[in-house]
Image (cartoon, rainbow, N blue to C red; front, top):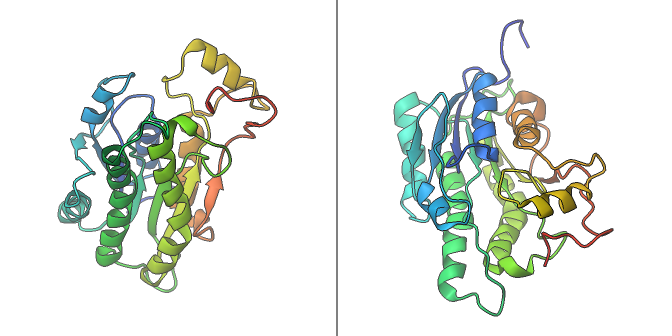
Length: 263
């Protein structure tokens, strides 16, 4: 890399799920900006208002638009808006998710559909539209196109009390290779990240202490830990990694002791 040039100079990125401070999405926005990218941020505070943690204003050096990604028309429209504003779109980091705390006995069709539309369908439609509009890099340059999304370790340990959420995250896990293969001719790389437990402020003191002991470094993951990985995967240095589900859990040992996150 030439002296003074940053890893993501001249790239344009869209980051979704930017609704609260101290979250993975917010850390990713800040990291991509620091790496030189032009970043468009999107969030949906209405979902947070339904959750126990509630809403809080996000303080970032860029504005955060509001988009309801459960609407099937919205993913493509966001991509087109970024293209209209900036002339290109290279990177999508789909960090949004609908949380759902309902077990198998009580989950209903409406909740299953809500998690599917927000967590899975929207990501497929974002990837589809990026594939249609992305201008591939020249053959002598590593591909600049990226789509990254997040799963939640449901393939490693059960999530009994979050059935609709776990099923949707399982779909994100399983679709990774297929979406990446479909986007490869457009020189777009797709990967999925399982961040493990990340301290974003939602856990109570007892849960935080119990989970901390399940890490070899005796600490939770942080949003910055995950932003490190996203920055790498989005850069030219990460171009050889494609179609992978990456368990970036910091050695989280969910089996030695029963995790309070698995009930």
